[in-house]
Amino acid sequence: MRRSRTSRVLLTVLALAVSAVWAFPVYWMLNSAFLPNVVLQSTTPTFLPLGGSLDNFGAVVGDPAFVRALSVSLVVTLTTVFAALAVAFLGALAVSRFRFRGRVSFVLALLLIQMLPAEGLFIAQYKMMSSLGLLNRSLALAVLYTAAVVPFTIWMLRGFVAGVPADLEEAAMVDGLSRTQAFLRITFPLLAPGLVASGVYAFLQAWNEFTVALVVMTEQQSRTLPLWLRGFVQASASRETDWGQVMAASTLVAVPVIVFFLVVQGRMSSGLVGGAVKG
Image (cartoon, rainbow, N blue to C red; front, top):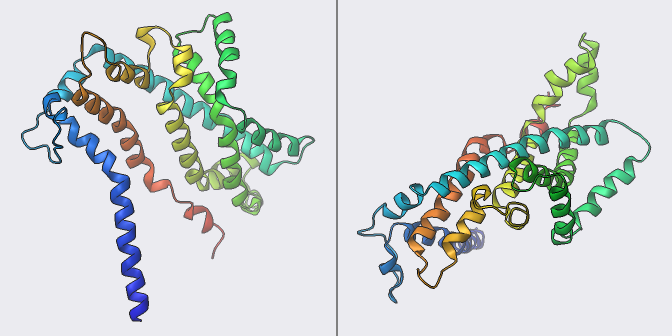
C-alpha cells in the first residue's frame, strides 16, 4: 500500500511538472499581452502583469485590418468545417456500410494522399486558382482546405460509423421506419461524437493554416489571421516590433479556438456509441 501511494504521488508530481512546462508558454503569452513594450524589452523578466493594461488589446482590436482578417478567417474556417463534414460523412458512410468494387483501393488512397507533402502542391494549386480567377477569394481557400482535410476526416469518421451496429437500423426498419428514417433517427444521433471530433480537426487545420493562404491570398484585404499576425512580427527599419501587441494579437487569435472547444467539449466522448447497444 505504501509503495502504491508513493508511486501515485510521484506520478502526480511528474504530471503536474509536465503540465506546468506545457502551459508556461501560454501563460507567458497572456502575461506579456498586458505589459507595455518597454517592460517586455527589459532584461529582467516580469512574471506577473502588475500595473499592466488593456492598451495592447485596444490597439489590436482598433486595427481595421484585424477585423477584416477575422471575418475572412471565420468565413473560410466555417465553410471548410461544414463542407468537410458533409463530404467526409457521406464518404465514411459509403465505405463502412456498403461493399462496392474499388472500396479497398479507395481506403488505401486516403492513406496515400496523407503522405503527399503540402509544399509539393503549391504550384499546381496556385496555377489552378489563377486560371479560374479565384485568387484572393475566400471560397477558393475554403475549397483547398476542404480538399486537404477530407481524406483524414473520412478515415476518422469511418471508425465511428463502423462502431454503430447496422442491427440498430434493421431493428428500426422492422418497427416500420424506412431506411432513411432509421438512419436519421437512430444512427445519426449516435455519430455526434465522431462529427464533433472531426469538426474540431477541420476547424484547427483551417484556422491555423498559413502556407496555403500565403500562396493563394496575396492581397492585403484578403489576408487571414495568421497572415495578418505575421505583419506584427516582422520588424521594419523604421519601427520595432511591438511584442505586447503581438502577444495580445496571438491571444485574440486563440480565443475562437477556445470558445469552439468549450462549446463542443461535451460531445467529444464516444461513450454514447459504446453504450448504444447495451441493455
